[in-house]
Each structure stands twice: as C-alpha cells, then as structure tokens.
Image (cartoon, rainbow, N blue to C red; front, side, top):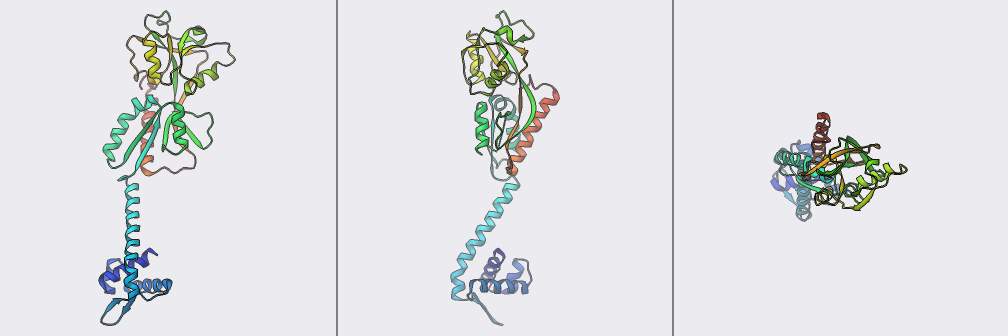
Length: 304
C-alpha cells in the first residue's frame, strides 16, 4: 500500500496528475490506477478530477494527514535500515574475557570507531561465565572466550589455544625451572581461580583421577587479582599465557605446566541461527582477523 499512499500524497501536494507522476517517477496512467485502487480499497472517493481542476474531497482531506504520516514513517524506517546496512547507525556489543578486552580489543575498537564513528560500541568484559551468558541471552552480539562445555544455542569457532602457566616470585625455589609437571606442585600453597571460572573448571577436569591435589589458599575470580596476591607473597599462582602482558609481572616469572597439558581453546562465541547486524558482522570479522594474526605469527602465548 505504500505506493498507493505515496501516489495520493503526491496528487494532494500538486493537485496535478502529471506533476505528481513525475515526482514519484511513474507514468500518469499508472498514477491514476493507484489512486483508483486506493479509493476502491477504502471504499471512498478521495479526489475529484475534471479537465480544468483536481481537488480533494472531504474524505480526501481527512485521509491526507494519515497518508502523509504513513509515507513519512515508512520512508524514515527505510532510511534508518539503510543507515544500519551502511554502518551509519546502530550498536555493537562485544563480550570478552579480560585478557582479550585489555589487550586485543582496544586497537580494534579504535580502528572500528574511526571507520564507523556513528556506530556505538559496548564491551562487556568479565569472567568466562559472563561472556557465555551475555551471548546466550542476546545481550552481546558475539563473544571472545573459551569454548562453552554446554553449547545449547551457541556456536564456537576456535582460533588458538591458550596455555595455563604457573606464576611464581623470582626468589621462589621453582622460579628457575623451564617447565613443571603438575605433580611437582602437588600440595604447594597456590592461588587458583574460583570454581566458576572456565580456567578452574578446565584444571579440575584435567586433574580428576590423576591423584594430583591442588592446595588452594585463595580463589579470586580475576587473573589480575591472583597475580597481585602472588606478588604480595601469598604463594604460587596460576595464569593464562594470554594475560602475561595484562598483569604487572615485575618480580614474577611464568612457567609452563605440563603432564597433563591443559589447553584452553579461545575463539568466537555466537548464537546459532542468529543473523548479526551488518555493524556486528564487520566487528566480528575484524576481531577474528586480529586473533588469527596472533595465531599465525606464533605469539598467541606471549603476545596478549
């Protein structure tokens, strides 16, 4: 019905069929057909037409503001959707765990904002569970984190494996080791992340049935807090390799932990069967390309 309303408004504006047809880029017979169809649909006479004059009927005058509003609203909606598709409007929300949010995302967000300044960008940075929950709930367009154990309505595209490492003060007896087996820290006082974090869940699952027992004395939710506690002398700590440049490492060393190796897959989390907005699609492509660059350069364990 948009074309019918548009035709009527054009005729009402010009009170001349030829000029109205030219305005909306159709032929005069086509314009006349649209007006006739509209009148038949409404079952009222909107326009009177003679060889000398075109005029609105009383019903036409009543209907005109309604038609003008309908045409204006639809044109506004079309302009808005075009702005969204051209990245001249809209909003993107990205969820990411702190290492990515603090190290990988900032240069991407700056580049994105410079290229698409009218698109609003929001970052939800938090522990693994927060990233997964915000994507699953539709709060975030996509997330960057570890693979959820229960996918449900989610999809995961792995980019690289993060490495779990031991954090120790430089004067600790183990600080000089190039690598350590988990068995070698059995019973040591250790600062390990809380049970609701993905890192802790991976560690607990990998050590189950091995006979290795962790002795957690403190269980913060954030790696930065764990590192600060190690600096303060609380004991050993656990850190992901991607956090090495996100925490203050003065006086600390990070040592790879093996046997068992506990890889932490990092990638893009999205909702299944959900169409991202054009703005979110471009952001996702930029993030994935950057993560793949880190992977290809072989510095994913050290470069975040």
